[in-house]
Image (tube, rainbow, N blue to C red; front, side):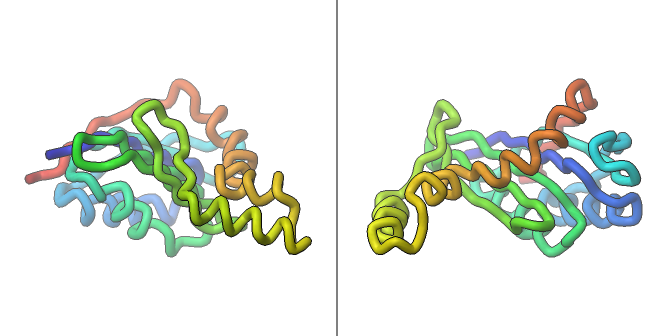
Length: 164
């Protein structure tokens, strides 16, 4: 059973690019050479994206392999499969990593206990409910990454398959 997904490296310093390729290759079990282009939204950085096909759970492995680099902005998505929900990971230097489960139409599925906790914090006056829900949906990450996403429109995409 496999799923498909996309890795978007929105910005990486040039010196980090080969390390990203090694990390991704380690997860997929194949040598990876990405097509890097300049990232106009952040001068001095580079961007790349590619589609992959591998076992469910690969998106989390890719996100884990990349999350340790503070200067890296990236997203990893995985489509739902017959045996698993979809996933979305977003990471920025300032916010860290965001994870969401996604349904078959790409909607973010927020677990009931996380909604109850957000409501409880709001009722106790610890936070604003709208801000809590925005965090559950990844809005701060979307806001920070939006200019990097648009800068990459028309970028080349490469398909990679995990050796099974």
